[in-house]
Amino acid sequence: MLILYNFLFKKINLINIIKLYKIKYYSKLNKKQLIELINTNKSIIFIQSFIRKKFSQELSDEFICPITYSELKYPFVSIKNNNKFRYYSLEGFVEYLNKSTNDFIDPFTRELLSDSSIHQIERLIKYYKVKKTFNKKSWKKKINSRAEFLTITNCLNEILNQIFIVNQLNFYYIYNNILPQFIYYFHFLLQRHKSSCFTVINNYINCINHHQCQNKIYLIDYLKLIITINNL
Image (spheres, rainbow, N blue to C red):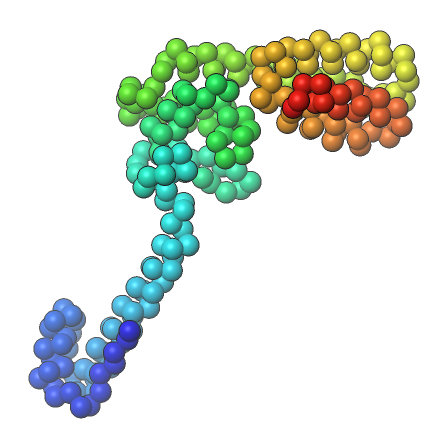
């Protein structure tokens, strides 16, 4: 609540109030100027307090680690999702990655972490010597698993490029060229990276849908069959 002062207050009382609030440069002011000085100062304080309170309420979730649900303290990990940064406590994030049976997955989007994010985390681990929650053996295993996943998806991307180079997807090309490669690479993907397979397959279905040839439906049906059979 904002209380404003008026001429009912004596000048000596106004001066005492100014001293109480530690306001400077009042010695040469008359009563009217003293009242204006106090009221202006109190109004500024009131507005600043209101804005800070509103700001803290709106951003309170951003200062809570989504993994540990504790107050976010430095050092922390910053991950960018859809042009918005999300923050996690370093130890909480490393512990999450160690306990996870998946590869390096973003806990919010469930997508594979970027190279820059992994390098950022590695630098923080090394600099802040996070030994309590850091499992070097588990980390190395996930690094190798991630490299394998990226290799397989790169090979699948090459097949996708082959599909779009050809204007007409005839049956011979589909069943003797594309499908055998799909079968080979998706076999490894399902065996070693099943948790990420659903996202990958849906991305390929969306891409192939843009092909002009009507025979694309045979490739799409095969990819949907993989999802159905493997309960993805």
